[in-house]
Length: 236
Image (cartoon, rainbow, N blue to C red; front, side):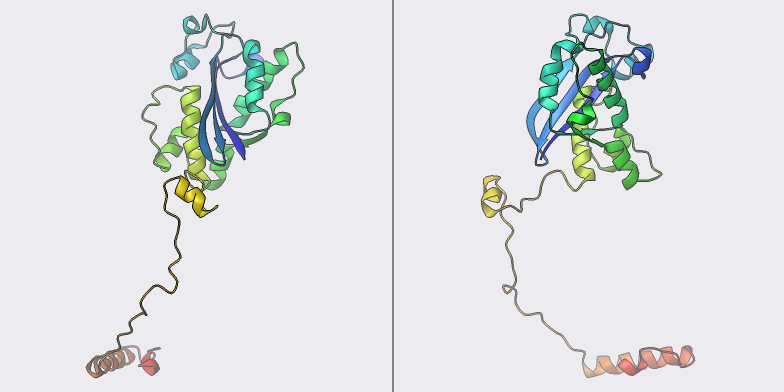
């Protein structure tokens, strides 16, 4: 199973108001393992970045002045994404921006959701943790994931962090090594060994006569205190 964890940074909040993508970050997982294959690109948006947005991600127009435009990287991006399951936090935001960018191009591109299965980790987190804060930072705290480097938002860094969050939310940081002993040995992990029949018989230590007498006396006291309602008096 191939999955791509994806995040974007933008000039503002609404593509319908002309806002554009300025950074795309993607990390690849295969069989729930990070492969080290990433896609990361800053983009020239041909418009001013809102001040509020710049305060979130720290990316300036001056920094983007010599960067390629979305149309220059779209083929490489779509080749990287095609056929994978996309893991995105608040997917409608990023997918909406990506589809808006695709629609601006002279080539006819299908909407992203027709090319890839999309999983929204925000919706997933709300199902798992209803009524709680489910921002990326809140989930990092909940699952004890280090996000100390996240002073500002960044598409690649946020994708790497989201990959850890997703794996934690869906059953652990890596696939369990249950395929074969060879796979386990190859990863330097000792295979699970069954122990049935290897243990010594369980020792049974019976109460002494003195202990049984004390037990019966205690039950008799309970029976008197409860008006004859001691449930264990017949089991001594």
